[in-house]
Length: 123
Length: 106
Image 1 (tube, each protein chain N blue to C red):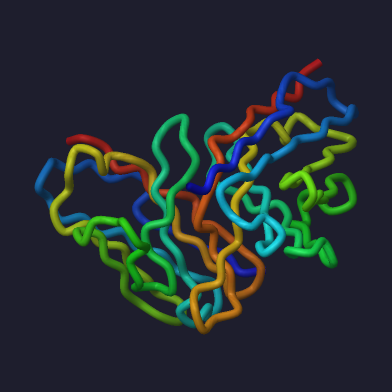
Image 2 (image 1 turned 90 degrees about the horizontal axis):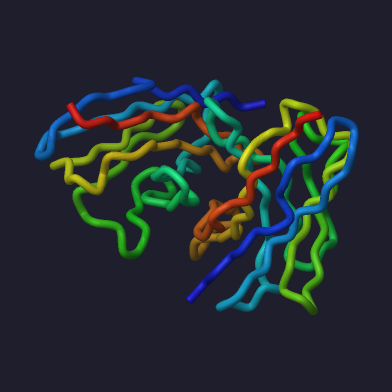
């Protein structure tokens, strides 16, 4: 079955960097786009970034553009989120999710999610 | 950017109740609307996509309707395992979530 497992979270000081990983299993990873989404304390879900199945394109939310970078290694079935210049407001649980196009469409919703990894920004 | 607004933010209900959650988009998203359920400590799970199509494995008590800017999620008879937070998401232009609706035990 499809499994997504995030790792790399922890406590980081403001202004520092952190790299999150999401290991995938149970499907042909190289055929799917992948997303990162976060859930901050007391807030709702926030989409952060997407990368195409072949890594040829990436898109970001304005809140993280220029600070975060999404990448993938299809040989390792893993997607990454490099977080630079982190701020207190980046404190959240970070999820990876698979992009899925229903038959006959070219718009993707998120059909599988990981359990999340907690990132805390604190001095 | 497309903004998504859900109402109510919190809903108190009893087992067996019919529950309806509303989601409004700041501009038309056609039928590119999904609904997710999230329980504490877990990742979200998709319930509905394309506004009204039930994801495989999701109980039939969940249903979705709407198009354009107005959408609803209905739970026909609330079960104990349905107490959770629900999010709508537009996927017409990038991706945006509503702020969530917490369904609590009355």
